[in-house]
Image (cartoon, rainbow over all chains, first blue to last red):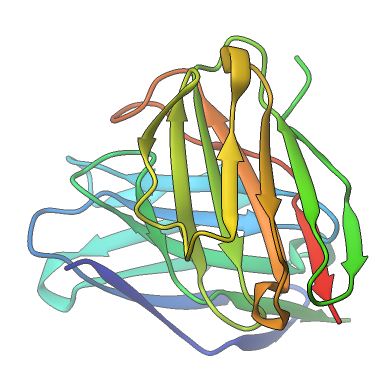
Length: 114
Length: 115
């Protein structure tokens, strides 16, 4: 069965610092992996996704994530945090390699310190 | 293009009352999904409509929850009678096609508080 673990329910970084949000997954088949973001008072928005091919995936707003099969990880990074990045981030894995039947992690709230 | 819209944005009801949540998907999206996030926990799948048919309702917690999508347009999710553990944020999402290559578009959610 698929599952997702996000390390840290809250992460704080200084503006301009590296953002690293950790995600590990469990899947019995090659997974589809996603990062979604929820800005305050908004719905979830797809940041990026990995399906097959290149393991480094680039998303919107300067975020990227790398699929590492050996570590069963899909960590999200951004070189330089901006105040507007403050939001909650959800890692997710799909059931049966679909874009819709997805299992979410518990979410990590990212705080940006001035 | 208008996004997925959900009504109301917030609802506070007492235990035992009934609440109906509404979701208007993006026009032309045949696939409609309901998800729920209970405080501090994962966002969990509830059910999936393809047009007016329930494709998958494996995530519905119990028979107090009833989802409908008459005519294949908007959907409603009724909770009757509401219990304290039903509190959370209910998200609706839509996509033009299910399966691969069709990311979900989420609404802003309805925050339900049962007191």
